[in-house]
Image (tube, rainbow, N blue to C red):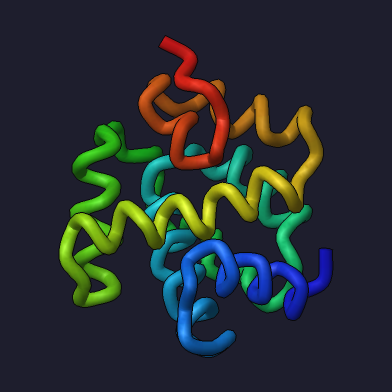
Length: 129
């Protein structure tokens, strides 16, 4: 999937005004996801995300993934975007369900294997509880 196609999908799902807003939300969600997943998983995921969006999945110099739950994820996205947590829930779903469409099934399974079951619904997958 090309970058413009990815952002168009996020824009449509999230009902954003334009691609610029979709890109801002995508980068915010990716930034929080980069805090939650281990570096090797992020590398593999980023390899399937179009440039330059993949840059937001860089873990930086963080040694380990931070273990936080879904509500904390939404809170961090809200902090990044300046939105309310309810809006961050919609934002996360718009971006992560697009990720699920853009990457291979094997990669999606790898990502979900590093997250508690409550995260699966954000990717548009059944809850794995």
